[in-house]
Image: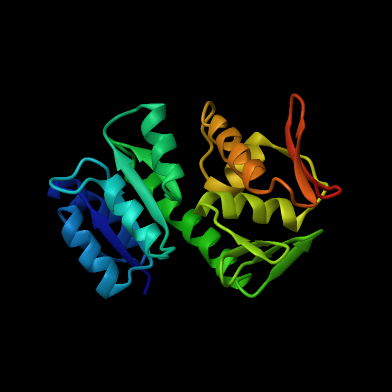
Length: 228
């Protein structure tokens, strides 16, 4: 059975979500705060985490950051009572896979859980792939990026963004397509987080034999060029 960890200090929200999730065959466990959530993640290895931002003690951002820094790629859906773009962008940049604002429709939550798990399964199925374009190499299983003989450090979403570019070199991606591919979150206005991550990748790929070109009025594409 697929195991879901629900982290929220409001027990009534958990009970409602559990009712709908269990009807779909999920096993759901509960943590009321960030420290207990981290213990569950370390020892129980859930298949997906639903993580509220506003928690007593350690907040959801801190939990998400620690999980990703430890190299754990468990899918995370973040919850918040705030409907603010900055919260959504921060959560996604810390490595969250999706984002929902409370109060939420429990049926939509179930649909989001299924969609995130499908993307995670597809990523796992491709875990042994290695992509090379020019002198840039990306190892999916090891989650490593190399420029020539030098390993470069990239953030989780930068890695996923670069993977999309390297899978289809020369393809023009719209910002919306990249947002859906990498973050899986269709929200008009959040496309600027794509621009932020592209800027970060461009800096880290400086001197390589690839570059990410802007397709004006549309998005971006990766092309091979002479190393600078």
